[in-house]
Amino acid sequence: MIPRKILFYIGLILFFYTCEKNESLNGSFQLSVSTDTSSATIGDLIKFRIQTEFLGDNYFVIPETQFNEPLEVRHLETLYNENGKITVLDYILSVWDTGTVVIPAIAVNIFKRDSTLDFVMHTDSLEINIISMVTKTSSQSM
Image (cartoon, rainbow, N blue to C red; front, side, top):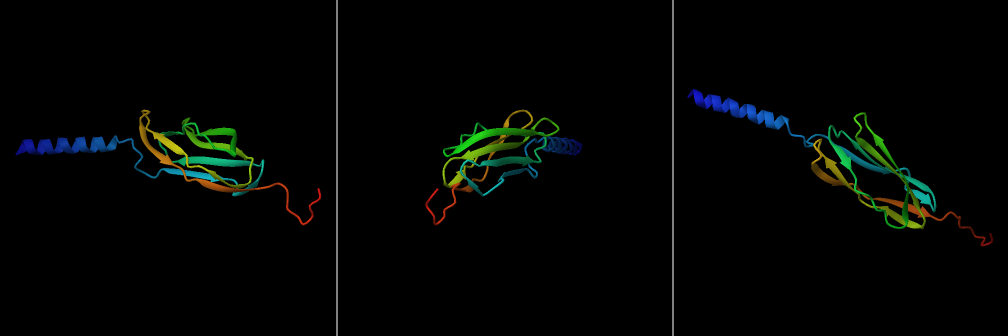
């Protein structure tokens, strides 16, 4: 009877040890995207932000994002936390056509501390209404 108790306690200790070592994000991880506007004029600079919170020891990587016409990336800024991990990507975008422009969904790869891929999330796509710089008036003269 004693060997069964010993095996039970050894098994219980191993179970708790393996549960404790799980590096996956089982908690409250947050990924958000935002723009500084929902309406702009041709040539305006639009700030598009991808932000993460509560990554812990994990980190994220975004494969090189290709924005389609008429979106153009003018600048990309990376912000880091105190551990040197990327937490924010700020894109400065410009648009050279009128109408509704869609910032596409972007794949965000979440990696564990040991550089193995944990999972992939996709951001929401965002729409921005682009209007002409010239205000329409009843007078057609310049």
